[in-house]
Image (cartoon, rainbow, N blue to C red; front, side, top):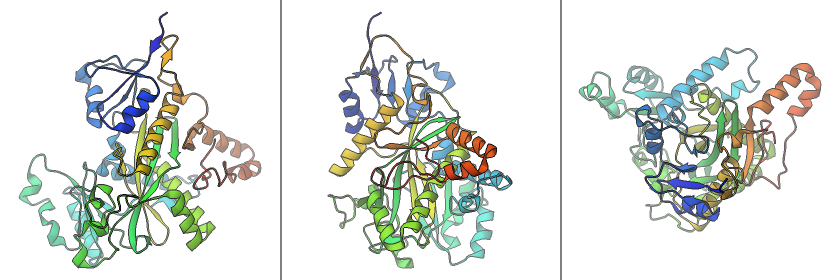
Length: 425
């Protein structure tokens, strides 16, 4: 049998994507060629591939980077709907995780407009001095976002308004604005974390060690005069890079390792560990919230960009999950990080498959054989089969396994933060 050369394809002409494929010696497929093995595709292309009318059938030698209905997690309104339903379900479970109280607030109080307008008005009147943030459900990079503190500002979203009756109107979510974010140097920031999922059933989750904090350029204030100032309130790099204070050397970014050291030095090791374990739980439970609605297509994997906000009580909040985290590079550190990210994703989903195979072998399922293994910058955040095995052992010998559940893999020198109890190498 003739040797088989792996073919790649992408519709995103980003250097970090193409360079990684080329370095592996894989061959680029033509734009109209359906004979490809790994496709780094936009969400629109994936939608077309999985459209039943397209007549497209993926074979065992093809994998691509989005699940068919990834939007159950990555569209703001659906994410909130799924998380609310999930939290309602597990709150009824008497045998649920002991940490349930700490995760019952994964996201701030949120409503869909115009559908939930009446419910929102009731909540607004209970807290008339609160600030709320409006976001279009399907846009990214801070587009279309604004903050309100008066009902009059959103009258047109009323279900009775003519605007609300219009077909194909753009839906918004409105969330209670976290007015007390943790500040560093007086500035607001959030976290961008990269989470790789190679299977939903069973759930297999990896976290990338090179997450970072994204800072606003202007000092934080809740003054109404600055309510419309995006440089105070919105951490998106796509917005902040237009501010005159923007630093193009570091891009307003801070490695999560440095953030952890800062929090440890100011608040102590115990508080820092509790915060980062809370972030782990937030990620895991958000994925469990969509586990049963996600189409677990074996040809798919996904690297999500999680945006997490920390308040001044060191409580993490899930802001949103991005299906296509930006691969644009704004600094040299950024370029190195994203090149490494793509390299390490391929090392897991293609498991170091060489550029030329002596024979045609399936790629599907390669990344879900055996227990999850740390690879490159990814460590195992959650391996459902391993977790269930531990839980089963706990039932059989509770004392022995309580000790096991308290152990942590890895060392502080290996990772920018300690792994939570949910990490099993």
